[in-house]
Length: 53
Image (tube, rainbow, N blue to C red; front, side, top):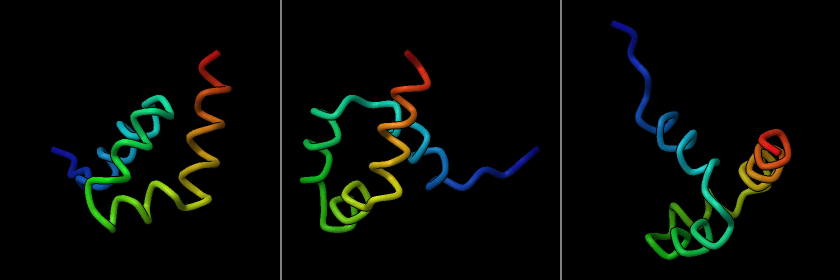
């Protein structure tokens, strides 16, 4: 069985959400706000949306 870190799974889920949900999840805690506001996450989130169109 292959081990997949929880952070990787969570990241793959969050990157697929719409922008309104991302803004809401930034209020969960300071760590989530920092992670979801980082430029790498925002870049991947935008580019994932473009890829799926």
